[in-house]
Image (cartoon, rainbow, N blue to C red):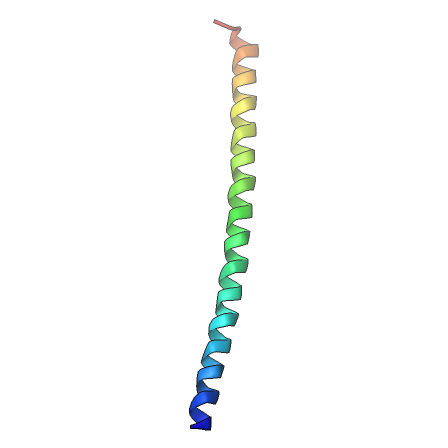
Length: 58
């Protein structure tokens, strides 16, 4: 019985460690998405500004 409880506790510990890694990676992915969204918005702004500067407002 004691060995069975210890095995269950070890599995729970592994699952908790895995959950921590998933949370960490989710935060990293969210950070990357935010950065790339800002980069894309900056590129769109620069493209629109350059278009207006080159071709004038119409």
